[in-house]
Image (cartoon, rainbow, N blue to C red; front, side, top):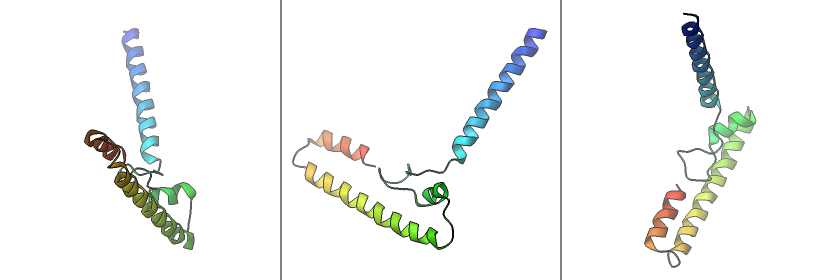
Length: 99
């Protein structure tokens, strides 16, 4: 009986620890969005990380938009330049990495 109770307490502690870790990870804002192109900054996530407020928020969002446009342009140029160098399979791999 005591062993069963100890196992139940241990399982509860482990479950609570895992739930806490998952909650902390979910609460952390993203700097690089996994829904955006590789290398693109997450506008709202970076605002949270940097704790910006007031007019600095819009200024930062404008800077991030310019940066993300530059990343997109550089990625397009890389793919265009690579077409004569890489095989179709390698291009497909590059496409999967640059998303």
